[in-house]
Length: 323
Image 1 (cartoon, rainbow, N blue to C red):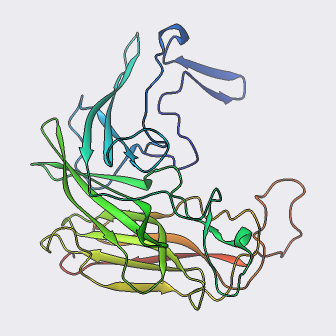
Image 2 (spheres, rainbow, N blue to C red):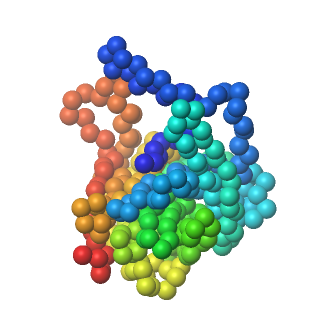
């Protein structure tokens, strides 16, 4: 299970669980034995399992990051970095994280042309760039989830990231990776960015049991598209690298965010219902009326009945052929 919050500690040195007078402490690593990890890029995603078939016992867990040769981290080519996380639960616990593959991908640019700011997505009627929305691409990071599925003959991973798909326009780069034996490869990849001057970003992607893919994301532009939610998809047998099913609207936004810190999200989530392994569930935010988002619930709490102008929408749907 992945935790999408901020920088994820893949291996915790000390974990404590407290309940009443009982405390259990597990030491994973001796601090003297830790080794700094050299990483090009910023941000890694752990796998999140879909489906009923689990990985084989003893197999390492894949951890995925991206690198962009146009960024400041020193990458010389655009790629997906694959790490294998191996954990042994025994009297002397052992864990290792090793870079096992750097898979070149189609060229992309995760550094959006909006200067040093993260607020790169304009909104209708908003002329102050400080009130634009966070592109969430500035660290070359893949965005939640890294969805794992075991098809028996091979294992699949799907993920995505926000990129500059067209000059000055955000789009969603998505990937399907395969692991056959212990070897990783890019099975297909694509960038979803119809040429309509609408920004698409902060996506999340998953596969159903038939191998069909659904991708959900945020949308906005500076003219007439208020922050809203849309989705697209493809069937397993469709031409590779394409979202062939067009675009669906989950809900259109009718307001804008007016805060000056640009924060949007931090993430959305596309998941598959475990009861039928076909139904996709997608959750994202949108704006119904213009205004400032409420702060996180902490003292002093907002007065009872106070509502934020942003809203959460949960949608469900199936793709053709999965019943």
